[in-house]
Image (cartoon, rainbow, N blue to C red; front, side, top):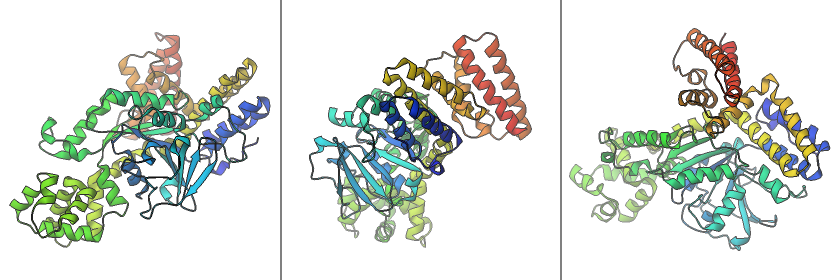
Length: 512
């Protein structure tokens, strides 16, 4: 089958090169492997597949809603929270329930615009849900909401591991066998959600992500983490926070980043609930008016009410208890306090300005910026590397030594081209992250820095340096890595060192 991948939709030149390789190889391999290549081509032409993963009740679905800008993912426990849901761009909003046999059933959204909590079908027979939305965010990124890895019932875990980013072939297309399907399965990037403590099952879940992505490592190129529910961290429990909740969350996120390295590029604090309310239109003018009423209360009363959620909703005041409960469900006590402080500082603040202030307080903008920096800016390399991993896995699954060699040779020819250096760098980074190549700690850190940053000054570890300083440093490090590759490195280290040398040399050329 010849794929109809539109090269205009491919992420960049590396994806185009891999797509051309698949097309050239299709007539030279078995029908089964060719069908797998067709699926790789389809995925290459699709937006970047980003899985939102984490433990149960870590706030994944709330964060998904905030990222998409609509309250579409159900956040209460129900049938849908036990299924993988892929949110992707469509010209018409619709839900498709995809069954294990491949057939689909179209369902309407619930009256509030979300996926119905109960689907009215036998979910034991459901593979996953496809949700199509007219959201601009989804034109460049498909967001995959997962039930949670290492934390749920066996059926949910199995569905998650099998379908992290793996979609059934289009109707009428070649069906892939299970081995081939597993080879092309897997999200290409992951946004991992943690709460206050990184536990052993967080490490297991990241390992499960790796297993579910055709053995591609989750690493600093394709994985970032967020510390969700940052407002629930007691500042007194974090040394150096000076009693400030956000400062405490930032310190804790930095510590968690060290624990999760090198699996993730960064850990950022976020308050998913406030982000969802502010970004999805859930925060209304009526909410702003209620907050104004609360801001008019005397300090002693207000401080007492804000001590605990049950006191806030049960205290006797002019704002109805139902209204206060609604505010609590949308903003929690931290968001309510931030909004009241803003109203008291500026009595004329509008509902729109209050919403923007809450959005800024949620930390969502920083998460989005990091998503763009880590994922969007490197989508071409991430997608091309993922596609090559799938191509290699398909060749190995074929069981034909001649076919395997033919695919291997074609990949080596592609990687030898100068424009494919980014793929070599990603490969070297993966080898170091996975521990397949043992590097001294300082050199491993340097490989991580060069391979996982998009900005030159950050790649060189010299933020804010002048262009001549950057060029001189790049040339000096290029020479050092070339010497290391030739004298003193093991054969495996030498392979990585040559790639890093080349990376520095290309940076020097670019700066010059």
